[in-house]
Amino acid sequence: MKRIDKIFSKSKVISLDLYLEKVLYDKSVGYYQKQDPFGIKGDYVTAPNISNLFCEMIAIWLVSFWENLKKPKNLNFVELGPGNGDLCLVLVKTLKNFPEAFNSINIMLYEKSEKLKKIQKKRIISGRVSWINNLNKIKKGPVVFFGNEFLDALPIKQFKKINGCIFEKYAALKKNKVDFFYKKAQKKQINKLENLRLLKNNGIIEYPEYGFKELEIVCNKIKKLNGGALFIDYGYKVEKNINTLQSVMKHRFNDIGKNIGKADITSLVNFGLYQKYFNSNGLCAKDVISQSKFLQKMGIIERFNILSKKMSYEDKSNLYLRIKRLIDPQMMGKSFKVIFAKNKRCNFSLAFK
Image (cartoon, rainbow, N blue to C red; front, side, top):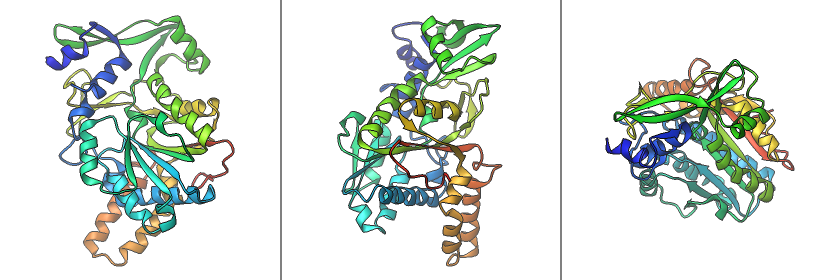
């Protein structure tokens, strides 16, 4: 009850993206502010939790990018939404195998959750790692942004097109319960959707306005300081025009209007739209590839073969199943996709060729 009251404290009716922003990020009731969602005891697992080899592939990709940029003495690597810190821990460990790169790459963690930030600071002890609250504070480059399951957690707006009429989804508080409904969309919102050519078909249109505002700074920094942004997430390239919002609690699906602040809510990432966004904002995002293709191009199978030679049968089988989960098209391999947006002067395209 208190959670709902705080979300609807000023108005009994709010837009869907504002509802999601409060449910996920509000300092007093937000899911990410109160929960440690990762692992078996949490609500879900991500690729860095599944296998260190995923993290190693990101580290190798980063070192290769650093080399392509002619080994700058100071390169800022910014992890957006670093979760429990699993990727960062492996990143630091792997980079130590490349001393020159290790001494040149500054790792910055951009985390909104105070709960997760405390977990990260307790686990990650390294002079190469710092925390950042404002991306505008990055004044020098080059800069590389990385987000694994970052885009899917950004609040979205939802619209419905019915016989040429456009309606926007809202959340309302009725008798201490959350109710969702549509009302006629404002002209300025319709114009935004038209400009992005999202109104071609009837059905549900999902529009990450919140995410675009978040990424505006990312685009500006890459254009000004050089570098790029690598995002890995589950999503699609062709417009689906369906409701992709989903909520998870204790590894089971949850109603998005229930267990407020106690359950995660995400949406499938429209990679075609983000590709269009990056390209129209001065960056170059040539292709969207599968997680399977990215990890295999980066050498995850070769790395598995090397490590498995010294493993017991049980450990080898365990690692094999973890890698399979990451690259099998029937598991995460196809549904998870990768996009790389870079400065137009940059010719780096490792794994995307």
